[in-house]
Length: 105
Image (tube, rainbow, N blue to C red; front, side, top):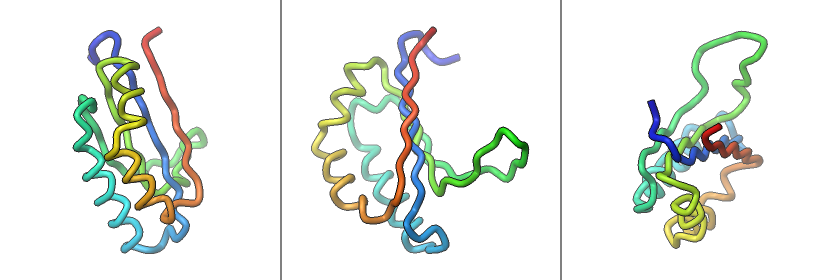
């Protein structure tokens, strides 16, 4: 169970060149560097699982799930120099990004 108050930030990336292993690896390397942001409590870098049902969207290239202790930590992450550098250095790799943020109900 995830601690109460946790802020979940889940980012999905669609690469410009989804067949390029080099672009895939470059984005993964960028995300690993990005994981150094101190307000990140936990993270997961993933790719689409080999599951096939009508409700599953496997069209993305890479997912980046972050857990923060609270919204303030996530807000800090958004303006952290490491995050800003990641966006600047890697934005040429993706054609689309979708973010899902969630908090406790």
